[in-house]
Amino acid sequence: MLDTARNRPDLPPEIARRRTFAIISHPDAGKTTLTEKFLLFGGAIQMAGQVRAKGEARRTRSDFMAMEKDRGISVSASAMSFDFKQYRFNLVDTPGHSDFSEDTYRTLTAVDAAVMVIDGAKGVESQTQKLFEVCRMRDLPILTFCNKMDRESRDVFEIIDEIQENLAIDVTPASWPIGQGRDFLGCYDILRDRLELMDRADRNRVAASIEINGLNDPKLAQHVPAALLEKLREDLEMARELLPPLDIAAMHEGSLTPIWFGSAINSFGVKELMDGIATYGPEPQIQSAEPRQILPEETKVSGFVFKVQANMDPKHRDRVAFVRLASGHFERGMKLTHVRTKKPMAITNPVMFLAADRELAEEAWAGDIIGIPNHGQLRIGDTLTEGEAIRVTGIPSFAPELLQGVRAGDPMKAKHLEKALMQFAEEGAAKVFKPSIGSGFVVGVVGQLQFEVLASRIELEYGLPVRFEASQFTSARWVSGPKQAVEKFTESNKQHIAHDHDGDIVYLTRLQWDIDRVARDYPDVKLTATKEMMV
Image 1 (cartoon, rainbow, N blue to C red):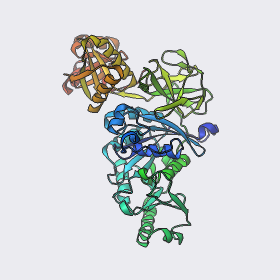
Image 2 (cartoon, rainbow, N blue to C red; image 1 turned 45 degrees about the horizontal axis):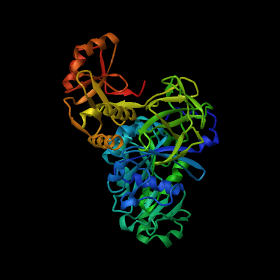
Image 3 (cartoon, rainbow, N blue to C red; image 1 turned 90 degrees about the vertical axis):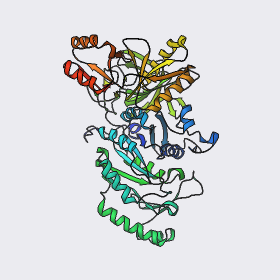
């Protein structure tokens, strides 16, 4: 988190009640199920859709692309806003699949905290670790939810140790499970000294909650079998000795994470986690920008685009830019300046999301996420302000790890293909390079699954069958340096040179040797694997 010095004024109540967070996890840890239950308890949906149910029932609300519904995975981040008690939650569900990590990375630039979901049987998995490193780079506060406690899971201390060791973060228990697997009864809520019992009969019902007075309260014995009660008391005594207490300042700095236990599919432990986000989660934070930081309490509106989704509504070739408001009170119809082009934009039909459902947003405050339908003016990394030339920083674009050539099934439709590819490039779904020599395009992605998603989307959204084919190139680097040096370099390496969709020069490489050779023969030219979006 950035400098949150105490001498800042209190935030306006409308802004202070906002909690903007992302959910991160390894695929299959139960993230989409947890998102469903959040919406259920926020009163946004009446019954949570089962990810594994049959037919119509398995349409979960946060997965809206055809491919997500077919495969039961999330491939593009989606945003949802709903109220919980007196708070306004803005929840961004991110793809857990590693092939879509760049989308996730950019999404994490738009939130103030992250909820990390861990599978009780598997502990910290590889993708959790990768996403966690991204949070670490941004010092995001993290709240942890250990899911699937109603199945056979590992020992609680073992799970906590693994988080502390693998992720180098202190863990403090916010609740403690009683029993596990078939014997899982519920949790003891440490922060509020309550016993929470799980109801296995109705998955959409909130569990019974019994207020108790410390661990020696005789009421406990009426609800918990003696053996489990003794183990609970022993465990908690040990936890108090070994684990740090909840320190909100350390949590906001990203060095300590509170952990809740539960079972999302049984709606258990979710409410406690939501209370935790409301009570301990950070308010909208300061945003880093050039030439100055943006404070959420400023009266002038500013916001930045962290994601562009094309064709959310296939009937209209629309593109929605997801904008995180960094400051001020936005009202529908406002004119904002698009900093990159210096042009004013009247924002007449901004939308708020509930997964694929959207409604017109009459107003929004710092911390909210709104969608602005547009025809390609807005790109990832763009900043919108009330006139001041500020540019939000820190939204990266990464060099792709896989490159393939692409051809339209019908050669007469090459122009259509170019349009489709440019659209996906601006959405950030893939990198598209136009080599200097020859016709055709080279498409770069992070993971193999993205090629399948692209091919299926180009066919579905543009009616254009395409095929991807092997490319001689294996990676791409952005080229920078003094103008003359770059010109000399591009002139003598034409067969390797391409341009990305912004027109920036890219060097396509076959081997590491190509990169080493450039460093040796052209010391003034710099090759980089990331570039900041839309400078």
